[in-house]
Length: 270
Length: 294
Image 1: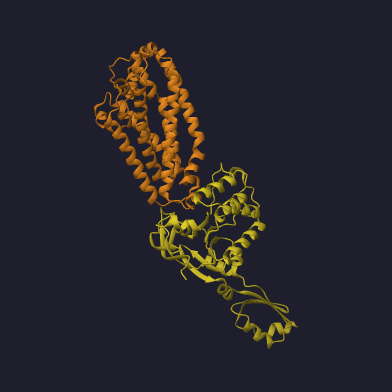
Image 2 (image 1 turned 60 degrees about the vertical axis):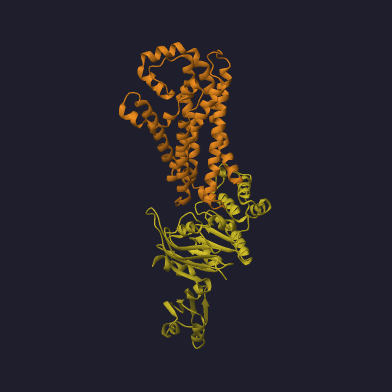
């Protein structure tokens, strides 16, 4: 297991650091810029109701709610650039095994060694969970640097920010669990990435449409973003346990199903 | 003694990519077993079942008496495997690849690996992405052999290797076999199989069509015989013995194929006015080819 973990670290340390660095910079800039642009953003959103709906859907607030500075703080945590970096990293990570290993043919060398498929899966999963922590920590560091310059009465307290981070990590677990499942079902990386990306896009669209289309609102519980509401968390300071449980359960279900498929399936590179 | 590799009625088909229908193997320790057959015959599928990459559809496959699917993890502690289409992580150097295998196997491979690398002329500090096909193959061999496994499963190991390296590898495999290790060797190069293996199995369309020791193959293989007579008249009038087939008369010389032992030809020759008889080595390649095609 140590050797496998070492391999995962060797292979993923650079992309993880790069994604983390990018996330840190994006968080730093967004945290600094958004409060300064509050008035401009409000004007823009009043002219573009669709954009306001989209923003409200991402942050988990009511469309009619006023976008004050504190609410806008939550926008940092749902900005498309932030979510794209986090999900981009984990889609790349979670499709490494087995899809990318089969695709590149290196699985033959790997499975020719005395390793069980279960230990391979566990090593890869450990790397995924740890790299998620690293990325979010780097993002949070970028946020913290800029947050010092926000007026104290406008700045969310540290505990509330930690709660949002925890909520975001649960989203990371849910998305990654299903990415592992998709990867375990296939033998090609590009289709696996495309499927996970399509699922995330569908999830976002569902949350967005649910704001003004009744049939979509009936299915909104299927969207991962339904369980991620940073504005609420920042305001109340408490993490809805139902949301956490749903995200962790969804992630665990995908991850376990992926593991079972991987340990039972035929592996063929030709 | 229990065979090292044993399969009975092994059958595996997957995703319409062919497979195997009936593979029976029983390979004892210390043997170099050549597994030959045309492309798509089922050689790699059999190897993949043996290594637990594929689950047998029916029949059984055992190595060291353990089930190849269920106990794959334990089996591979004592197996060295070289894939047919070898792909190693391009970012690795030979040294790093060896260190990774060392960590996974949990044994010190540094000295054994470096010795092998020196013997095969492998630069261990070169990155895989800059290696030629032959150098990558050498690295694959070092990684498969460094832990001195009891069983070597090599899928077309000489692909990309130059002739001196092929000779070196053959010598190394013979050393290992004489030390009691078993070599399961898949190849397209029939001459190589003939020179190296103790036993040869031929697979075609997913079925074993022959499985014999190399001495049995030699007894069955035709040998080219050249008989020289003192005169054209003798060459033209003498009746050939039944052991010679495909006879061609060219002046004072006969050229023919000899099947079976040479004793019958010698007895016949002793009673004839013959200047010379030359018998070439058994031509196993021709015999293998007949199994390939038929």
